[in-house]
Amino acid sequence: MESYETIKVTFSDSISDIEKIFADPELSWGVSSLKEWIDGYESSRFTQIAENTAIITSEYNMDCVKEWLLKTYFTKTVKIQEIN
Image (cartoon, rainbow, N blue to C red):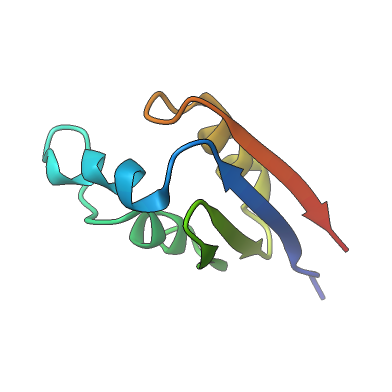
């Protein structure tokens, strides 16, 4: 049985500002929000808990999610904190 990984993600920008990128069809990867993009990874869930903070859980895609968050070009800084 797999166990879920949980991270707390703090963005330098507000999530609502980050989500403006999803208004551009060429940059949005076919989704309309950051939550929809994260939730699109099988077994992954995005829960916003503050203006610029979210909890993400994933059963087996967390490495991909973290890599995308750290390499993305639409936010200046992303802080990822592992939660046990």
